[in-house]
Length: 365
Ligand SMILES: *Cc1c(COP(=O)(O)O)cnc(C)c1O
Image 1 (cartoon, protein in one colour):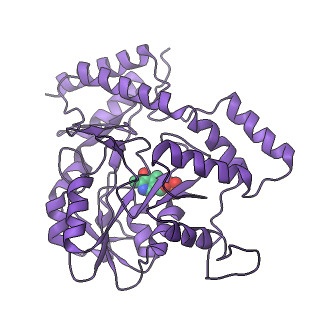
Image 2: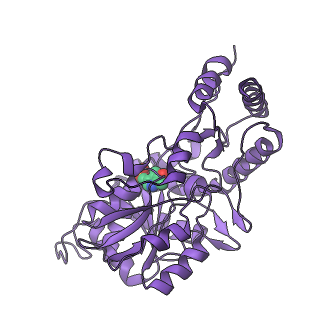
Image 3: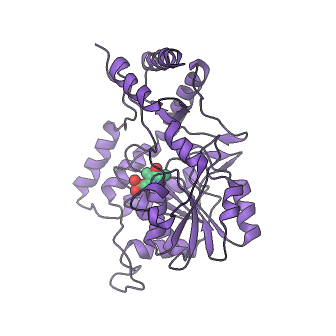
């Protein structure tokens, strides 16, 4: 009777299909002119023209970006534990140690005081995550990084277009990464963009992306194959022309939910912050998992828990942080629930989400 409302839904239209066809017909599908155009268009659109390098995933982007920034064995990089595992994985893959710091409860992003307490003589940098599309406290973290002589990086995987005042995320750090995975605010199928503060580090990322080569068969360093294809870049270039309208729709959907939800804690937006609502994440202090089930079974409303297990409790990463306690991280992992906010929601969908959450929240309290 009622259609199921999914938690996320990538939008891929006729224009994307035509762009792929154009590349396929050209016969040149590997990294080429589409990738170069996508890099410069993405850079102009989101990061004020900073040097930008396309790679085949966001994770590869963080990994190569950290390597190019000089992160390696013996270094520590401070990260949140309340994020997708790719953040800490990328640090660990360089041979450095991820050091987990707690988040602030309002925005779920790194708490600058917790970061400062985690700095040691081995700290090389700080890697905040603009979680759910809300910018981390970049002004405080930037001042802290300068004062303590460490670098600042950015995991902007979920935050295309987010800003603090007039300054977009991706322009605060020495290195920043945007993901282009299908559920992110825009996609190229798979892909990532690495943004660098200077041209020389960007050249290092380009070398690492392509077996260490700038000129064919003159390999300068030991590198990876992390190239983006022209097929993916062509999809991304079309999405770039649509992403602002999608972000506006996400923000309008969030404003409607803010105005109408009752009995739950709606997302906080810091003064001066532009939130791009990759996720619309509420807190449900009692029986969150019961609410997930009831939304799905009784109201056909999808929802998601990002993320149920803090990184420092994962089998893969726990050895970096034995006995660590991060109270706000653990509380968030128990309480968060992301409701659909994606641009393809209709007014009927929004009304149904509000009705379902309000009815269940009232029954539960
Ligand atoms: C999606 C995501 C990544 C990884 O990006 P991929 O393109 O999936 O490799 C890294 N960090 C965060 C916070 C993410 O959400």
